[in-house]
Structures are given as C-alpha cells and as structure tokens.
Amino acid sequence: MEQGILPSLGMAIITTMSAFVGALISHFLTQRRGLDLAIYKHRGEVYKVLWEKTSLLPKWPRRNDVTYAQIHDLSEELRNWYFGEGGLYLSDSARHAYGALQETLDDSARTNRPETLSTPDYDVLRDRCSDLRTQLTHDLLSRKRMFLASR
Image (cartoon, rainbow, N blue to C red; front, top):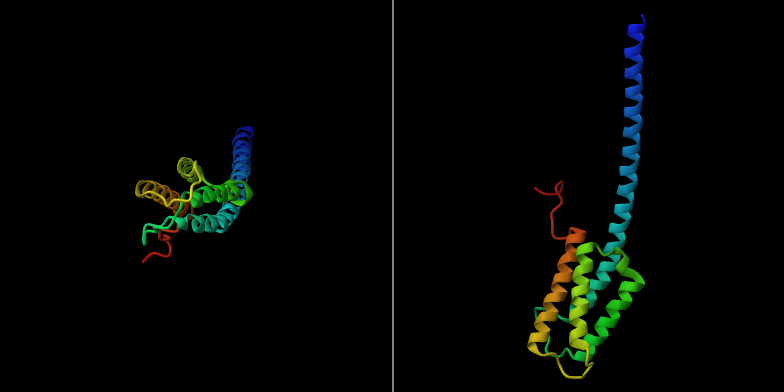
C-alpha cells in the first residue's frame, strides 16, 4: 500500500510545483507585457516630437536655407527633448543614433555662425537625422506589417 502512496504523493508534489512555477511565469509575462505596452505607447508620443525636430534637414526637397546657427539651436532642442521628455524612452539602438546625431550637430554648430550649411555638412547631418528616424520606426514597428493584419 505504501508503494502506491509514495509515487502518487510525489506526482502530486511535482504537479503542484509545476502549476506554481507556471503561474509565476505567467504573472511575470503578463506584467512584462503591460510594461512593454506602456513604454510603446509613450514612445509613440515622444518619438513624434523628435521626428518633427529632425525635419529641419530633409532629403526631399533639399533645403538651401539652413544655417549653422539653426544647427546649434537644433542641438539644444534635442538636448532639451532628451532630458525633458524623451530620452528615457529611447531604445539602445535609437540612443546610439541620437548620440551620433548630437555629435555631428556639435561638430557643425561649434561656431554658431549665420552662414548657410555647406553641402557636405548638410548631407552628413541629413544622413544622421535619417539614421535616427530609421531607428525610431524600428522601435515602433511602423514600417512592418502586422502578422495578423497581413493578407
């Protein structure tokens, strides 16, 4: 009789422990999903502001009136955005792209002069803005079709 009880008791303990661990994992995943959704929602809001700020340097149509002083101002606006509302939500890859843009802006804006940007400076800055916007779209999945919505 004891031989039948011990295996049953062992199975009951294993089943209970498995259910407990399963419940913990489910709870963790539910909490993580809620946090991810909250971050995603906030990213959409703050990334929109950052996207608009980088419109100073479009590829099409190219602007010929952007000055070094405006580049200096853009760098300060981005810094204020970073510390005031959005830097906390940047993914690692978007943070690197933001840093690369700020470094390039700093190089170009160092003199804060009123002349218009040279073509090479414009091109490099435009590319850095584009790289940042690309990372923002990756974070928001805005360039991808949703699996369930695809045909």
